[in-house]
Amino acid sequence: MKPIWIVDDDQSIRFVLEKALLREQLPTRSFTNPRDVLAALDDEDGPQVLVSDIRMPGGSGLELLEKVKARYPGLPVIIMTAFSDLDSAVSAFQGGAFEYLPKPFDLPKAVELIHRAVEESQREEVAQESISAAPEMLGQAPAMQDVFRAIGRLSQSNVTVLITGESGSGKELVARALHKHSPRADGPFVAINTAAIPKDLLESELFGHERGAFTGAQTMRRGRFEQAEGGTLFLDEIGDMPFDLQTRLLRVLSDGHFYRVGGHSAVKANVRVIAATHQDLEQRVKEGVFREDLFHRLNVIRLRLPALRERREDVPMLARHFLQQSARQLGVEPKRISDAALERLSRFGFPGNVRQLENICHWLTVMAPAQVIEPKDLPPEVMVDESGHAAVAAPVQPAVAAALPTAAPATAGNTAAPVPTVALTGDGWEEGLEAEALALLSSGRENVWDELSRRFERKLILTALFNTKGRRIEAAHKLGIGRNTITRKIQELGLE
Image 1 (cartoon, one colour):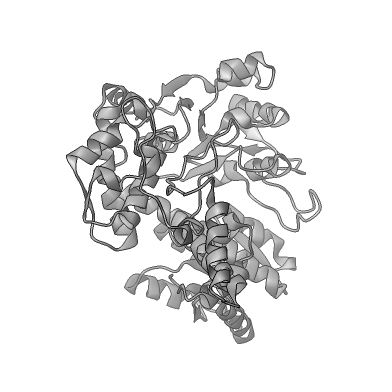
Image 2 (cartoon, rainbow, N blue to C red):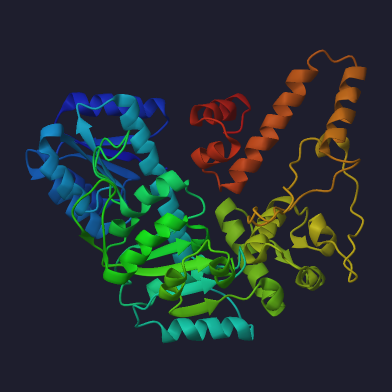
């Protein structure tokens, strides 16, 4: 990971932050003035996060913010300032700062803020890599060609677009393509999943809040509308937006103004809105859970993305692309896939659409034993005959079966793409665990608890890290454990 750059003429501030971040295994580099920072940017890659004081000899933190943002628009910049310097803090937000840190600061809160900035930076890097390292979208099927033509026709338009399609079909890719080819391409692209944020927090996430607007609002915060100023705001899963917030969104789309939570001054929004949903919005309107006037405001231009089963001719091309992509991410030689395996893959229904195909290709990159993938190497859910019945999978030894995760069953509320699984013996992984435990106990082992716990934790953490492409904080969040816990476990289990 790239280092956190700390810019402050106060040696004690630099020292305290360096030591605190070192304990969190975050590399740092310190500077005493903005001139040295700009000189370093000329000679090397930028930092993961920049933490800068606002007033220093030889330059202002706000001027540094402006110059850094011109080079690295997605770089999170945290501005340190005194409470008495509130005007400068407001200017920092207007200049695109990620957050400001009031002095004197509480060290644990400062470290937590920097961790949040690191997560934001890593998400931005992944998004940029996926955009720059690969074609925007792939598809030769007539339905996809219709989508490409629509993107082309909308390339010089600022009109609101509603993208519909099943989960995993690539709605955000279409939104990014619309942004990239629009007059707003030089502005930011900001995405938010309205279904993934609790109702109580969503209003603040969208519109921001003033200091003191509610308990815990210690600083003024810009919402996603302000972050997307001059660019595009992508509202994913708009069909799940709470009804009362739909009224506020309608107001912004109607007159281009909004109020921060707790604010009294209208803020003008120069933002193009692109919305997406996997739900039938007309039906949601009939059920009374989605405003009809908001539906008509969003439904100016509608793009429907086809499901992958509607464009089976694209499966071979997509599979080869995802195998190449997965190999690059894992630093291994790309695997090839035989025509027979591609033919079997193309017959699969892909309930999780393109996202599921991508997950399967990640799985194959890790699990396929040979360099050429054959039909027998495909995951069990793909191994179906033409009548739709599951093929018989090779049995897995209980010791292995007990350690491997299974996919959660698909439900109406579970829209995540199914994860490839490994066939299990017996009625489930618990039986495999039971068999392994009995074998160890019968052998006279006395540390069975430690042995199985260690193997279970190791497999669980490795699977989570693979799922998050190595991002520890995200893996810890998904597992429901703390950041320090996953770091300690990785060291204890020898997973470094």
